[in-house]
Length: 333
Image 1 (cartoon, rainbow, N blue to C red):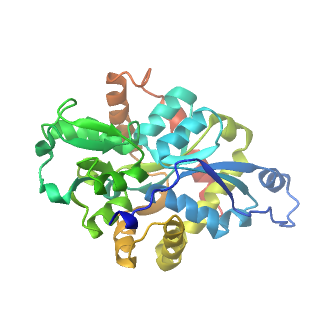
Image 2 (image 1 turned 120 degrees about the vertical axis):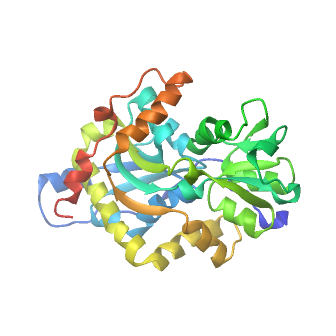
């Protein structure tokens, strides 16, 4: 069974999208300014990052006169760290990572791209026969510490189910190494995301005993460095226009989207049937925008992080959440 589970490389890799600025012939200084920008795009190589991967492969950015230099990492909290270090301009991750990034480096949300609560789950080794979280006392649980799902699991799921820190052994590892650890019985459970959870179920390795959606629907934001939005506001608007373009593919041409993303995982050595992949993709909801009512949700997460002394202060949401760029992108898109 282990032969079916190949580790994805942990090194950061760059792939050129082949994007070239199109000569639109409009002659506008605003278009010229946007075309002159190369976006350093971060994305995670799990299902949360695949809408961004599709965006880069769709041709939508080129049509908007944008270039990208792409930075792939195992999870979004690593992209956030790259952005704090100003190595990357844009990237996606969930609310807790955005709050941390804003506190450490002034990062701002320019859009909500997707909701992924269904994609995060606690998966227990099937042979253990465990069906309740409280029965994991003394067990080894794989967790990518610092990730949004890791924070939600530790801060919300465990306390709600009578499991506190110290009751279990936390094994720190990247999400893309957890399947192999589960198969080799190095760990007893994992807090992971798609497509790894669907693969674990399909291959008979593990059983999902709790889905994170019960506790958090997990909106995933496209974040930007304050430097980038200040220097290139027109590029940000054109970038979001490209997102609105590809949103139509997710809604009207899901097979086209699925084929591109399936090919990505196949190229990395993961073997899964179309049915398994469809299960994984069915747990993500892609709808680029900036919905109302985000502040109370973010405030709740910020209060937890502040209590744990992970941030220095509750963010000023008018600075951390920037719906104005999406408002402009919707005009004439």
